[in-house]
Image (cartoon, rainbow, N blue to C red):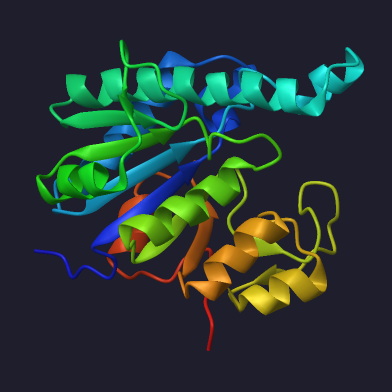
Length: 240
């Protein structure tokens, strides 16, 4: 049995990660690969909560271009996260991984409402829980939802799986060849340096609750397993 560093995690996936090279929508081979990676750590006995973004379905910029109110655009984005969550649930269950979707906005015909104690019980019973709909409030990102749910369920860490980026850099490595990768940071470093890994609300919430964050590349097979078993990859953010 592999050594386990994090027994209960929140895995943060971007919506774009499910789109792959398509850029939008859900790419079936890609979501199947992601589900298999999740199954690999589920088989180790890890308790897994998941937050999925909705950027492959809807971007707030589209709402701005239409002159839409910010709150309305954010609610549409929340619905996008729910669509992604239901798709991921279906693929996981086809692999034999029992999964529950809990939404912050009630839609009882397709998912459970978010109830913290029930979510913890699902995890204890060996079910993956996908937290959909963000926080249920506009003006808050799915990064903040990840930090909030991690604090609520007592997660050992937030695993932030990036699409094609292998950690936190001083600038965007895809556009700046002088960008420097950090191996370790504190949340105060993120806030002081203005690093765009997660929004300031999520960083502050994680810092206040002393929740480690590991940022790594989702596109390399086996990386999620490497993180939970303690391999040093990506960038680790924690208070000293």
